[in-house]
Image 1 (tube, rainbow, N blue to C red):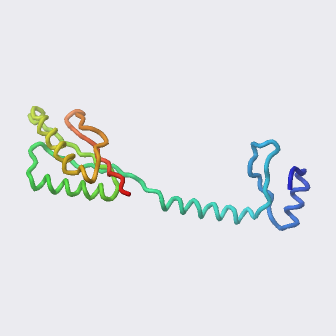
Image 2: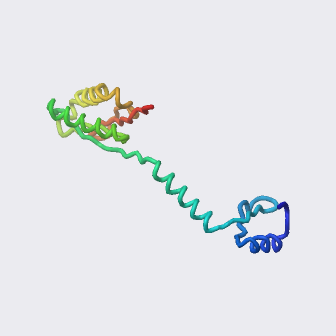
Image 3: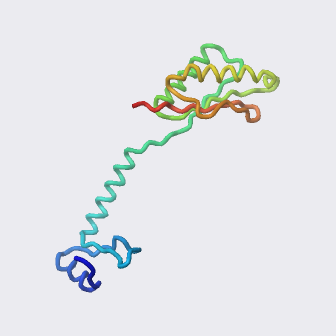
Amino acid sequence: MGVIPIGEALSAAEERGLDLVEVAPGAKPPVCKIMDYGKYKYEMKKKEQEAKKKQTVVVLKEIKFRPKIDEHDFQFKVKHAFQFLGEGNKVKISVMFRGREMAYMNKGREILDRVAEEAKELAKVEYLPKIEGRNMFMILAPKKTK
C-alpha cells in the first residue's frame, strides 16, 4: 500500500476485519502488515513446536573403569559405551585410581587407549586422555553418519 498515515492504515485493516501488525519497528518509516494476528501467532507456535521436535540434545554419559579391571567387565562396559554412542551421546571414559594404584598410571592409559581402539569405527576421540586428581579420562564423540 506504500507509506500511509496510521489512522488510514488502521481503518483499512478494520474494513477487512483484520489486525494492523507492526513487523519492523526499527525501520524508517516503521513497516506494518494487515493480517489476522491470532492466526499468525498460531502458525508461529506450530513452527516452533516442529523445530523443537527435530532438535537433538547431546548428553554426556560417563563410564568408569579401574586399573585392575577384568576382561569380561571391560567388554561389558565397552558394550555400554557403544550403546550410548549409537544413541548419539558423548561418552566420558574415566579410570579411577585409589591409594597405591596411583603408581600405575600407565595401566590407566593402556585401558583408555584400548577403549579408543575398539571404538574407532563408532567414535572419534574428542578430548585426549588427561589426568585430573585421582582420575584419568577422555571423551568420545559419535562419528557423523550420512
